Image (cartoon, rainbow, N blue to C red; front, top):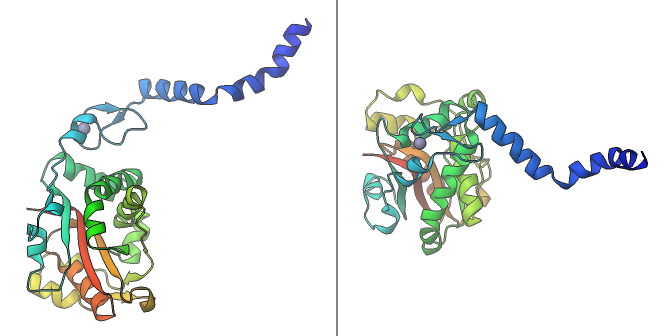
Length: 250
Ligand SMILES: [Zn+2]
């Protein structure tokens, strides 16, 4: 009887000795009944701790532009603004896992997936960061209404992931987007450039003075918004501006 009494009394402490295996057991049980679907291929079941399945992970369409001078992303900005370095980690391929992953980050609330993709960006860009002596990152700002509706800025998530792998800091409070430019998609590049020129505001100009700044964007297409943002930073004393996207549309 005293033995049973002692066992009952120590039961809560015994539980404390193996909480992690117990949690893993619960997680496995939950995965058995409610497996996660890979956001890339929408088919394979993945564990709770995995962001995408192994097949999607190994088939991500890397550009390797970070190793290539005069790469296609840099060429976007030729004759438009003075960019030190530009790249994109992946190609944006329609109806492929990378498009689906970006869709889940932007429209399905998968903020952890955004940080995860930022970590991959960090791995690919680390050497370029050192070569170009980048001081810190700035995520391309969203208009506050859009950020409020989404709950986050996806470019900030990418910056958080980059910080995890490279320790490069970011500041997502320095630039604000005053005008929502989402209705401009049908306008030509030149018209759009004319409109976005005045939509960004820098809150603390002393923080950008003589700094090598890296702008981070999710998808680089015409580069009109990033160009405007880069010009404002350069006009207010930034030493240099570089641009990196998660994906680049071919
Ligand atoms: Zn997959």
